[in-house]
Amino acid sequence: MSKKFGIHARNLLSNLVISSLIGATAAHAAAPVQSEQAPGFYRQQVGDAVVTAVYDGYLDLDPKDLSGMTQQQIQVHIAKLFQAKNSTVQTAVNAYLVHTKDNLILIDSGSSDCFGPTVGRLVDNIKLAGYDPADVDTVLLTHLHPDHACGITTPGGKPAFPNATIWADRKDADFWLKQSSASKLPASQHVFLKMAQAAVAPYAAQGRFKTFTGSDTIVPGVTVVPSNGHTPGHSSYLVDSGAEKLLVWGDIVHFHAVQLPHPEVTIEVDVASEEAVASRRKILAEATQQKWLVAAAHHPFPGLGHVRKEAIGYSWVPVEYAPLKTAAKVK
Image 1 (cartoon, rainbow, N blue to C red):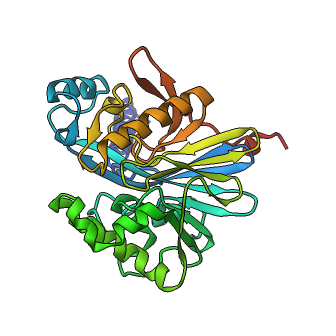
Image 2: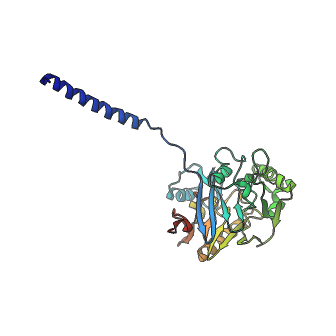
Image 3: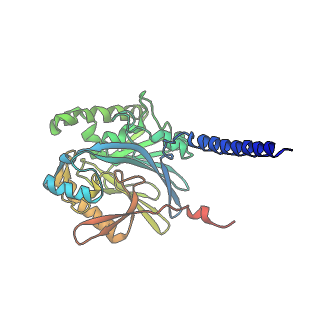
């Protein structure tokens, strides 16, 4: 082989290697950007029960709907948690499946088609979590606002949980299921009455909408904790399993950046503001004293954590991602 031919061969080989590397780099760079989030569920063990937080989506709330502090003070608290100033604040809508030995319970149900395209994902996320909505036997509603109650019914008006009995406090049902309550609400909230009535209708027709009063125990291991004010019959639920407890508190807090340090701050959709503040103070104090795990409808997903007492007000300590105790056992 001539020297000239050898040089030519080496150059050709070098060019082939470079071309291959360039091609590989180009192929790697061409990988599509992945924009889908992980499925919206998270599991937490509470004693012998498995609790699954389920994400329905989010709503944009306006800080101008808050009262009890100046807007300047409110914006300071929002900025401390790196939430955007002088704009709406993204607020999660969470619900919770509680799987006990005997029951599959859903606490709150999300928004269905009542609040637009950013919410209404609850049923899909329940399925992604490995559950069939038909296996839910009990739905406990903290109250009948549309982001908590509309999800019991599909956009087509059929039961989303065809084998479940729906429960709500009698005072809440008496208020939201009567059109005469419109006189007690701002005009912008009149539509909430129609939404609640439409959601409940298919269950009521089948005798599967029921009400409770006070601190009833509806299913074993779950006790009603009255926390009225945000709505006339707003209720929280205490899940008691083994040595552990979880408080599902509904709408005790909407803006965690503001209302935890300052429980006196109210929101426009509170039906009875003073009563809502009293309930919030009571629930926050008890959750702190008892060191209950809390499931919050409008905290950042999965909305699970503890409340910690501070010099002024309270703060939130979210759970840390972890496998279930049963899954962590060495086989």
